[in-house]
Image 1 (cartoon, rainbow, N blue to C red):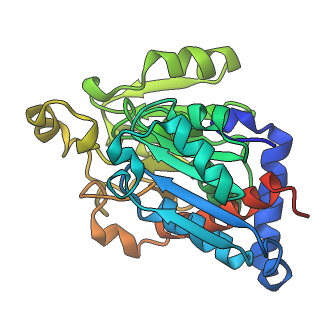
Image 2: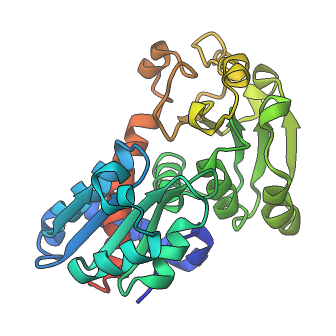
Length: 304
């Protein structure tokens, strides 16, 4: 039995294997339609979610399995004070695999340590979001055809952005990747992400507050929202929430083969006018996430 709490729980070879499996699922969905018959996925989400929860559930249904869903902590015994450890033990009695989202960093790890089934971290606070990174990797591979020799701009909330932290950790294992970190001073990438991933890998990185100045360099632009739920002070949120707004005008100097990504939901950091730009990949990215979660479920349940 194996759990996935951090994207680094998967080797580069396993990431490549999951990408290949997801692409085969995309091309041959009928081949996989009964692979998980008799299996049950539990989704336990202590924070709101649209894409992650629904894509996990859609993935299991499309593999022929069933879903047990707890959509909020308020509708579970967590509201009565049940611990994450006890919840994980209980869900192990009813399901074959658990996807958990929690506002506290490390909670899915606690669940994995106490469950007798595989646990997948579906986002823990501002820490990690490995299955979003799987969606991101498939998007990059399908749209750019490679993981190497890319200049990746990450823009917005890099401090609390768990999707950013996980994507950097994954991409540091490929050669020729340069990171352009675009954020206001208050939302810069945490130093531990740099010291744990970027610096040891020897990858080049630059930090800037000016998105437009670096736009011509980018092969990938990964936009993020400023997350109101991570702020203790609403005044700080209101001051920073409009730091970066991507518009067609700002994209004029960008490469024609740039891809624009966003883990969603967006608020106003990407103008709706950008949706019509062929370089906008964020809705496809959400779809790619479903296929990668199918591939991951098959791997963790050891289904061929």
